[in-house]
Image 1 (tube, rainbow, N blue to C red):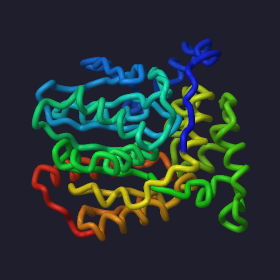
Image 2 (image 1 turned 180 degrees about the vertical axis):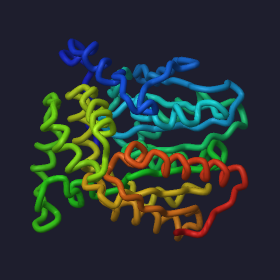
Image 3 (image 1 turned 90 degrees about the horizontal axis):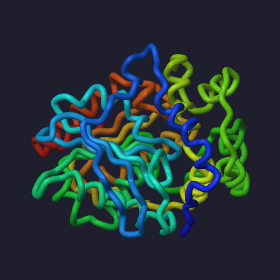
Image 4 (image 1 turned 90 degrees about the vertical axis):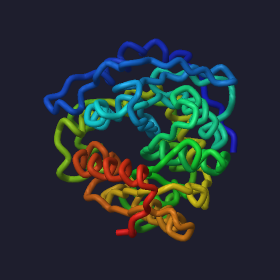
Length: 332
């Protein structure tokens, strides 16, 4: 499965607007962006320039945050603000997203894995290990890395957190559209049209209500809804569509078995984009391999680290401690 990521092209004309969407100010302080302590230049072998930011002390324990489809570094603002003090928090724009360019190679699991390798090369000192946390496509990136570079897992990471992610069968399980996959199977062409068409996403109160209803949980705040939708809207439509077409066919089933470190999995009970069945399947793979640290279902939609910020941060703190000890807790 090969999908070519487009360069910015006409999308570049809206760059200031897209930057503004990612840098909005909210009453909820944890959602606001902070200046990075270091901007780390990373250029891949095919010429993609990745935006990589580091926050916190240069000698701190490293946490690498990997965002999902249509998002950017700023998606992780709640975690950057909470952890960039005692820890060295690293986040990067996946290629084609945020301010990262697309390069020349096609989208596939190898590309996801190779980009993560390039980031780890740039941010880790020899012998240093990081805690990896991936949301949605970010969790798929970690699984792809484990699939293609299993020898690096124990060398470069101490623990992993996979949040509202999947390994396979994304279009056949999504319930974003009413009735489809709940009552009747959704045809493949519908997912391609819905997610793979390069059109700008509108804003406004009506769209926020729809986004909250289909992507988040009923108690999500106005700030959380506006923040999440603004981050997604900031993605270039061409990149959003191209990556979506690739994700619809992505198959990483079983790759989590190579995550030979304590690995925690979080699902959202209201997640319609990647329903809980995906996370449970990954947790079962990890459990069979002996690497499942904990499996948790939170009362959120897809944006779990935003909707349940404190619970997510508490779990990430616990994952960091598990990585230090090398212990795997009982699933629960």
